[in-house]
Image (cartoon, rainbow, N blue to C red; front, side):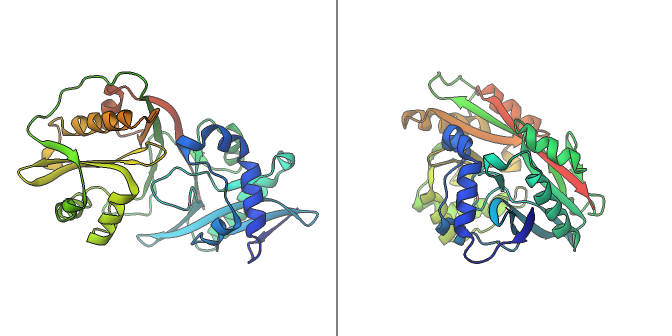
Length: 321
């Protein structure tokens, strides 16, 4: 077996391995978890290919892995890239064609990751679905640790904490009635449009101080964000947007930019979520998805109150180097 770096012209190999390796997930989970078939042109659009490696056997590519390395507050960390786009689950970027599994291909690819990260990094990590037993076993054998709660990197200062936490993936069955919850009647809850971009810019600038959701608060970016979503719902009080929630097209995945801190604990979050579920139901979505860190109990209580049920978890496995 031989592991080498990606070269121009390998796009077709990557697409074939990906589509074969994730075939059962594409067939069963594509709508809600973003597993899709890809083409060579899709691989060409990937922005970060420096950490893309192929495993070969007898000169034939049989697996690939996609890694990244980031500088966070002066500390280099590296991990398996979960997806190429934003706002989607996507498939983990380690794939092996089915007939070559259980032959150590995944192990060799992850060892390559560790060497790749160790050249300048201090921590390797991977995100693994809780129902992916082979991946969990693989990372465990290679010395990765799965820690409940949050894992804090000791090198980062308290002023800029670097931590990883497991995530709950929860589903609401929209064929069932939406539970009644206590609503905040003082705020106006409605769909946002392009006429709201100035107010959204003010809101985005403020909420980003607490939640890293809006990396770009420009008018152009916010207009694009609104147009790309199935729906963006805002809660407005005295002509000021104080809370917001959005939903992805196709998947019905709910993202929660959040409620401004001074307006929390006033049932605005549950009001926004209730309205979002009603809209998705009216538009004939079968399910709505959301996710939240396991350690974020207040958010999970809200989702559970609205009828969401935990479907699976995204576990974080870490290995100090």
